[in-house]
Image 1 (cartoon, rainbow, N blue to C red):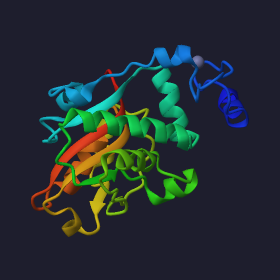
Image 2 (image 1 turned 90 degrees about the horizontal axis):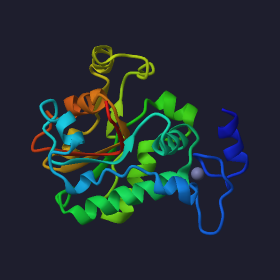
Image 3 (image 1 turned 180 degrees about the vertical axis):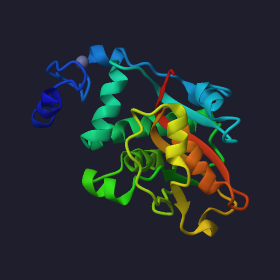
Image 4 (image 1 turned 60 degrees about the vertical axis):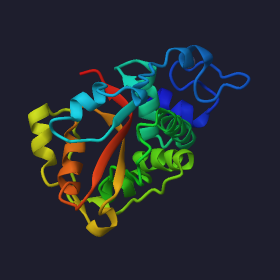
Length: 227
Ligand SMILES: [Zn+2]
């Protein structure tokens, strides 16, 4: 908590280890940058993300940029973006997500980029949606438009973090809905979220999207837990 406050007051400290940043270092020091566990999933079919989603969600392609582990540098990145509105950090990592997908060729058919929505009450409280920030940067790189607001959260859910998998699935039933299904008809959408854990949130989004005619869904996450 104290460290997080210090980082807001002194943005020139490394968000993970707190070292003073020098030269061209932004957000992370060179040491922590070297520790980032990149997954390189974008290039790999049947990667961990696809395996976790498939069977429950027939995704076309799916990827996560980073491998999330408690205490590693990825936790600091996700945490800063999610709770402290680190917009420049979100932009930087969103662009990396976009670049990796663009160069893989596996995401070439995408028409629209769609953030996993927050409930309006949570977004009002937080002031932003971290998935939306990632989408905007991905959009810059991939040249596809972001559509937010069409897929929306109609129910406020309590925090997922202390629930087991079954409770999470239960908690997510009927949470999402689509306002104008025709906007997504015959479109290949890229669903974007900050972190993939059990896949309950993605599954709930898919339940709302899948009845739409001709829709195809791919998914991109900033990070994936190892489980
Ligand atoms: Zn550091």
